[in-house]
Length: 448
Ligand code: NDP
Image (cartoon, rainbow, N blue to C red; front, side, top):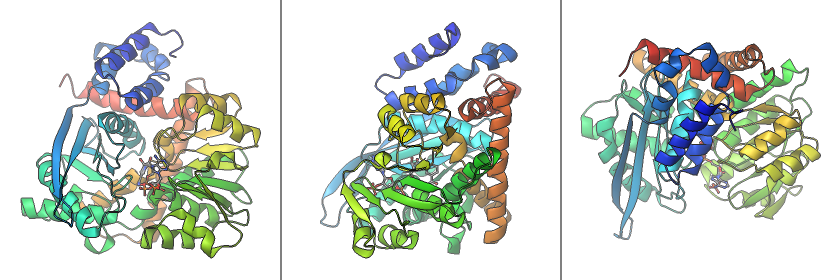
């Protein structure tokens, strides 16, 4: 796994032994370590300072009970998490996920990834993640509010605009951010806008934050395609999921001349060779909060496949934007056989180890999540800047800043891959560039 590097093998073994049963965390650590052998040859001080070992052990892991009441007066108990991983570059920063599958291993994999993603944005951000096994599906607004208030009642003491700044993720959008912020304000008596990002525009949110992860993904992919004398124009694009990231990735792909032919949710897939209408998806998912199968009722050219596998559909570009490990080795083989030319990870760690190997072996252009979906957190940092200055930027200016950041991330990752002898390998480029940035700051700040 680590090219025979015994030091890395033994660190990885220690991580897996110390954190049993946390498969996604092991996977995320393994993926970063697999790029680092040449870095240690060049920077031996990183070994002396035990940088990797320190990065693999979060600064703080907070686990708490959340007791809340539904509309019928029945009590429910969920588990809340916040893992503050590393603050060498700035305050802890990373989203909150509400999904029944969330456990400590999910939060640790996401928090670990977040350290490096945040470093790549060039903004002063540390890495963290949080969430709960609470399932927002089918809950009323009042129940969501009750849950968010109880969640924040426990968490608020660990947060602050210079300490730890959460945001959204799966199951947490602007509605939940509003309820969380409301309770933070009530408990602290402070309108501390920079304590949370993803706020609505009328009370401290940033323009483009809603669109940022999806748009940013497509901006980075566009840079990568252009670098290989290609573009989105006329390309068939398949996008898994139909949440925040997927919807705005689809919108930007269409603006750049691509055709989105399939999208999904956790129940099924819609396929429309004439091109999916993103406004209908927004209405169904963002306004009505219904299932994606509704789409076929409005568009005769669309077919709905209950439980279908989106990766079986022939496409030029695949953008996984739903969840982790959604592209298996077999899915990757199918995509390659069907002629895919590029894959961009909008979700966090959506491709398995086996899938990545298939893509790299086949010479597919591959943009890993750390780089490709960093636009969301980068725009969160822009939201924090505006909050700190009590300022409000225009959509055009904020979008321009996002585009520049995504271009810089691409250049940084592809330049680093080349420098370390793996041209075109953005996984290597992203891991190495981000790791060196964080590690250097940790050495500068001493043994703390
Ligand atoms: P949303 O909750 O808005 O949407 C998630 C989408 O993925 C929904 O369509 C959901 O379907 C689907 N999905 C979720 N879990 C599963 C599953 N286990 N199997 C199949 N489909 C699933 O989340 P986001 O769009 O915000 O997040 C999507 C991904 O992007 C995540 O990996 C997240 O960590 C990552 N990300 C998000 C950022 C952001 O700014 N929002 C920033 C960076 C990364 P259903 O409605 O049926 O559950």
